[in-house]
Structures are given as C-alpha cells and as structure tokens.
Image (tube, rainbow, N blue to C red; front, side, top):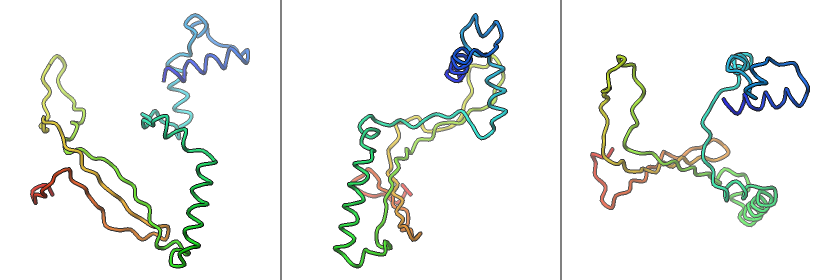
Length: 155
C-alpha cells in the first residue's frame, strides 16, 4: 500500500496536480486517499505475489515459447495419433505440507496465550499432480508421498 501512495504522490508532482500540504511535507499520498482509491476500484486487491526465480522469469520469452511450440508441432506431425491433441496432457504439480498453519483468531486483549491446536512438528511435503488435456479430460489426482513404504494411515 505504501508503494501505491508513493507512486500517487510522484505522479501528482510530475503532472503538476494540486495536492494537500501533508502530501508535500511527507512526500507521500495519504492513507485516506489510498483507501478511497481501493474503494473506487473494487476489482483491485492487495495481494501477496508468488515468488518467482530470476531464471524462470527470464526463460519465459518469445524465442523460447516459439521453440517449444515448433518442437511440439513437429512431434505431433511425426505421430498421427497425437494430431488432434486429445492425447497431449499437461501436468501441474503443487507441493502441500502436512502441517496446517493456524488461522487468525479473535482473543481477549492483554492475553498472551491464544491457542489453536495444530501439529508442531516439521511437516512433510506431499506433491500433488493435476493432469488434464485440452479436450477437458482429466486423470485422477496423483499424490506423491515422500516415503519409501506407503502406510494406509497417511490417506
């Protein structure tokens, strides 16, 4: 929210717009302006962005995307059974932890202890795989557990 307020101030200065003395002295837009801006634009929300590595961000460019689709097209032309795209699947993996993070709760002021029962040990990472094709066919959810021996109680 602070970046929004700073950008609003800098934009107002650059465009020689009239602004309050508080903006000028603090060199930042007011909190009331920021809340008003967010209320005027209900489609916007304050969110935490996903972390993305530099290599992943720079690898997604026009050349690499074109190379991928050229290679995919060549593979589909070599194999007639893949031409309609119904046998080409996309797999998306997501890591889930077995330890839940507790939700915020309302507690009495001055009370230091606000308990919520959750597992305190270090959680295991379970990989969940979603597999779907362009026609909308989906395979059942696949879960990869980090154990050598599967135990039924893990389900």
